[in-house]
Image (tube, one colour):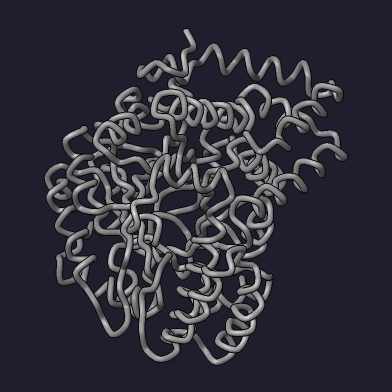
Length: 471
């Protein structure tokens, strides 16, 4: 039975409820009166239920789809302004005991070289990332209790935070590792992580078990209930995501929104981020083997609908996607992107991009400087800010600030100050020129006069060599 307040996976992600939702969406997709009512509700910026959003996803009336796109763009501006948060993934180890059929790290893959970074190698990777200008990382590792125990992850986090190279520093480490225990989540919290990210891959239980035939990840309930354990362990910023292409996208979309509703119902705070990866080619993985691939058009519509259904969430898109598609979905709701990513273990410290240990093909292969310049040329502010985590503005504190519009007085100046650091320390001449003009223009968009004056003074101090100011 469907119950968003239940702590049992099959009750808060209820199969019958999803089927009922999809049936309702099919029956009402041409009911334009209802569609218009749902769009009107979305304009209130309080979000939509999985049932309402599924009707909009099923509706292919061109006028209404364009309205959804326009609304998604406006809601993104209202909540996140024109800031785009920058990060990079850091792969620590590709040892894995699971049998996931869509990932080249699966246990039976004998062609991929297995590698695990030593602390010295972690240090080299981090220095390479700092030398690009990155301040925020998402660490990734396969599930292997022998090779990648939690103690190894914690040691890596400690190493990452300890490295200060030139003006570089990684100020926030987000963690994307396998589902674990409340005790382990407490340890991650104590280590000072930002967001705990775990992709569901698919909410369809039967498909989930087939796609994860062996290993601890086979346990659907343990995996799906991980976010509740993370929050019980004190981590109040969690990140959801499905791997689009594994199962029918409409099913996944409904499940994803139900998971967000569940977190809100039980913990009073929904997901801090939602990621939207698609199945991509990798070492022994052929995406065409999965017959649920989605077009760029459907992908863009999903992004727009996530933005209007869960208006407060940060939306993440990786370098799996092309520059062209990233440009499209940034407009429709994406608020965080990776730049200059290498998805192989130890990839950053090597001059040439290694392909033999990549988790997936990287489509957008530009340098961080090129990505930053591209964003600024399109009118966005690339932000390297990590202030909210470090000021304790997480969980419901962050959501309250975001929902009442006060975030502009924190995030906007923080974005400008961290961008200024990037321009001073890492950017090319052309990027510096565009960036300084952008900062000058964007200062006037800080609503509070006092905050604006402080930001101006801090920007001057950054030019004179000071670093790490934040509101």
